Amino acid sequence: MPDVARTYEVRTFGCQMNVHDSERMSGLLEAAGYVPAAPGAEQADVVVFNTCAVRENADNRLYGNLGQLAPKKAARPGMQIAVGGCLAQKDRDAIVSRAPWVDVVFGTHNVGSLPVLLERARVEREAQVEIAESLQTFPSTLPTRRESAYAAWVAISVGCNNTCTFCIVPALRGKEKDRRPGDILAEVEALVAEGVTEITLLGQNVNAYGSDIGDRQAFSKLLRACGRVDGLERVRFTSPHPRDFTDDVIEAMAETPNVMPQLHMPLQSGSSRVLRAMRRSYRQDRYLGIIAKVRAAIPDAAITTDIIVGFPGETEEDFQETLHVVREARFAQAFTFQYSKRPGTPAAEMPGQLPKATVQERYERLVALQDDISWAENKKQVGRRVEVLVAEGEGRKDDATRRLSGRAPDNRLVHFTRPDEPVRPGDVATVEITYAAPHHLLAEGEVLAVRRSRAGDAWERRTAAPADRPRGVLLGLPGVGAPPPTAVPAGGCDVR
Image (cartoon, rainbow, N blue to C red):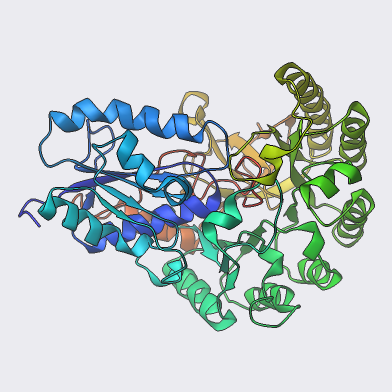
């Protein structure tokens, strides 16, 4: 390596699994001697794209970004570009063929190879393409540069055993592999010792956890074990599959105080006929039955979902079934997507591909209905006192409005009046909700209480560190907090 440390930037697209993978990439690069590029820097020495292959425009987005970097790289000797993630796993050598200025292409199974591949490309002066066909090292064993001092992702599994006809992710990330519960809890305890007070258990199909280790109740046991970790205040998980949602998980959620009253459970369609075509292995009544059980056990739970509009063969009657489920479920929020044809998926070859205008019109009706429901559900929060975990970067207008932002226990976004006393990200503010909008809440009165926390201390230590010490991962999209809210849209994949 040169005497002057080379700078890096990781640009992330897609789901939370990608965001977490980017933390690993950043940790690996820093362990190899790279440092994060300063905010606003013209260009880093190494730019890494961590890609998503779920949406139809994923290719266009990647190659558009690569095209913008081509002249900058030509004018800057020594600059390197790497492409990883799901699109790299899928397209492989095609990336270098279409963008020959790319130095490294690596897949979802060999994130740990990134620093070696960059060095090899630099020495040999030719592109390095390495795509492993199976997982080499479980990602959580790799170095990590976490974005947040107070909240963290914890991967409990990788891969997926489902065969949804619209989704290419299982083909790119492989079959499900579970971590040992002891390894997961060791990571959780280490994070809490560093000051983290909120963790999100992460997996492609999180409540199928245990299928690889032969214990069908492993996930509910894991939730209860997290409840016994001293100092861990908030536990979330994403995303469960309705097929694997069992009563013992609902009981564990209700009976474990630090498991938050919030659930993100993808619906995808309310039509049982369409669900069958999607190979979703549950039907409308099964889905609504889970919602009813969760509400009975946890009355204040905020439930969010994902819905695809315009799946091949979807009729107006099918779409009306989706609207019916939305009305019945009363989702706090829904991430809605227009069906996106992905080469390599069975749905891409199905008859009955719908005209864009039909899909757009249905999408607009669904969004309008869900916005009305979200607003009505949020209005029920007015007058309630909630504890808000103060966040960094969630309120883009906070400086202009003299507010702070954070998440309530049910994961609703709350903007609140900035108190006179110092409040740090990671601290907890008790506020009273005074106004509701469809996608956020306001607490416009005085803050009722501020609890300084170990997480706030951890944030303070990080921000007070010397200027030459790395202060976090510079992630690209999505950028809505640290870590991002549980329901970051991923375009049809059940990772949230």
